[in-house]
Length: 383
Ligand SMILES: Cc1cc2nc3c(=O)[nH]c(=O)nc-3n(C[C@H](O)[C@H](O)[C@H](O)COP(=O)(O)OP(=O)(O)OC[C@H]3O[C@@H](n4cnc5c(N)ncnc54)[C@H](O)[C@@H]3O)c2cc1C
Image 1 (spheres, rainbow, N blue to C red):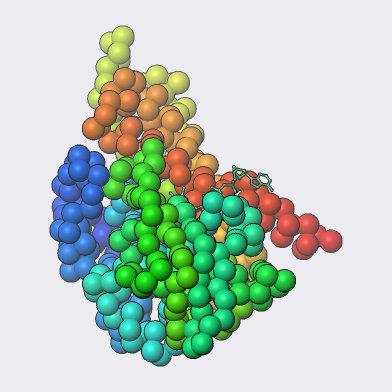
Image 2 (cartoon, rainbow, N blue to C red):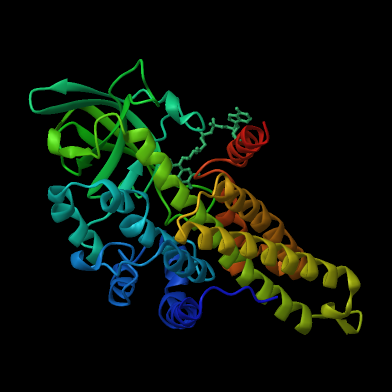
């Protein structure tokens, strides 16, 4: 079943797919071998207009809609997850907060450079003592002459080690916390008192790194406040809605590619004198995967349509993220089963997808947190 976006977006899909297959896919092997993202990938993405695509045209972006960005992420995810990180660092949670809440000075300072990929941004909420319970953060910012002094530690921050600017969530009023006591502060690389104290890799591609960021009496001026003092939690949650839709579409793109590969393999691989594709056990796996993808796509595209129409979507972004991230787990598992031993061999894309997609059930809110949010919404609207 083909679930389409608008004709313009479908045309864009064809362009991104061509670009990904011809230009980016050849870099996937190098990324896996070195654990690094080559500069060439940034250059190609910049020249194609995908870096900073959500940023306003007046600042060198493409003023792209959330749907357009999600479509690009879906197509990039058919190749290698790390390509989506380049969009994250230039059009993701922090860059989109600049557009919604940034002062003129902040926009002038950062947005143009983010649009060209000259600058990269990260989003720092999670701490060793506060993950799912994000309102429990303890990184503090205390008032000082003309600014704020930050102390604390963040971890698991995507691209934190290469970011030129990080939007850091800090507690500015410990009594109010999520209700007006958390403030988003912009901290630039090389600010005294700010350091990257560890870089972690996960079971996924080594090129996707998570940084630990430490703040020791780190001073930032008043102009570093994103939005207003006390609005940080609201800004973070708003950004995360976009992030959830982005994750859902990344999962859909990866699943689509796996279905394509598994189908081709089932048609070509012969066992006991017949192609696998003629065996009912295999057909059912392919059928279940097709249903999974169609369901995830229908839910995500309809939610995107409602977001673009300015509707209140309630917990629909959580539903999209939850369903898609669990769906891709089932799909990768079936793909490995269909490929047999070959599916487990290092260097063959299937095992990389299997490792890479596991984080989708944890980052941007775990499955359990999204079930909590969906249930809360359900119970509130049915009471
Ligand atoms: C690849 C990746 C990239 C990330 N990038 C960023 C980033 O850029 N910026 C950032 O700020 N953070 C980032 N994170 C952090 C991510 O947001 C957290 O890992 C996530 O919110 C979960 O927090 P935690 O790891 O501390 O797990 P915990 O909160 O300790 O949870 C552990 C387990 O307990 C479950 N659990 C927790 N509370 C409940 C409850 N009340 N009921 C039932 N179950 C519960 C959780 O669902 C989970 O299964 C990233 C994480 C990953 C994996």
